[in-house]
Length: 281
Image (tube, rainbow, N blue to C red; front, side):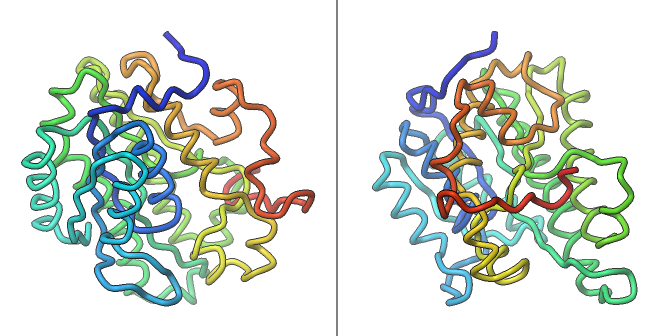
C-alpha cells in the first residue's frame, strides 16, 4: 500500500531517534514529525551554541515541544558507542520504544586525496559510516518491536559517474557507504518488516554546511529550505514498512509520489536558478 499525500497525524505517539537534530535538516525533520505529535530523541553533541552553526539540542527540544511533539535532548557524539547506548536507553525509558531512526549526522570535507588530512578522513568515516552503523545497531532491538519501523539514512544514490569520486574521494566514499548500509539493511531486515531507505536532495539545502563550506550567501540564495527534506521524510515514514524499502530516493521523486508537484514554495529565493546538489547527475 502506497499512501499519497502527507498525513502528520500518522506520527502521533510514535518515537524517532534523529542524529544531528539540533539544527538544519535534522531539526526540520524533527519539527515536521513533532507537528503530528511524535516523540523525538534529539541525539547530537551540540550542547553549547556555535555562532557559525546555531542551535543546541536544548533549543531544538524547545522547538519540538512548541510544534506539538515531545522531546528528549540527549548529548550524543555518535563516534562514541557508549554515548549512543546511553541516548537509546534514555529515549526508550522516556517514550517506551523506537519506531524509526533518521541517520542525519554527517561530516564533510570536499578535499582531494593530497589535501585530505588523516584526521578528516577518520572523522568522516567515524561519523558517516561507523556512527550510522552503530546508531542503527543499538536501535534495532526496539525497531523489531514496532509495527511501522523505518531506518532512513540521508545519503545519495550511488552514481556510476566517476567525477564524484575524483572531486572528493574520501567524502564521496563515506556517503556512498552510508547508502550501501541502507540498501544492505533493507535486504537484511526485510523478513522482519523493518524498512531501510536512503534519501538525498536534488538541490542544495540552506544549512550551515552550505553557507560555511559550499558557497556562502550566494549558494544559500540558490538553495531550497530544509522543509523539502522534512516533507519527503514524512512521506517515506508513513509508508508500509514491508513494502517501501531498499530505495535510494531523491526528494523530488518522493514528493511527486506524495502528489506535491509545485516545489516553488521550498525555494529560499523565489525565481532564482537553483543549485544542483552534489552526487546528482
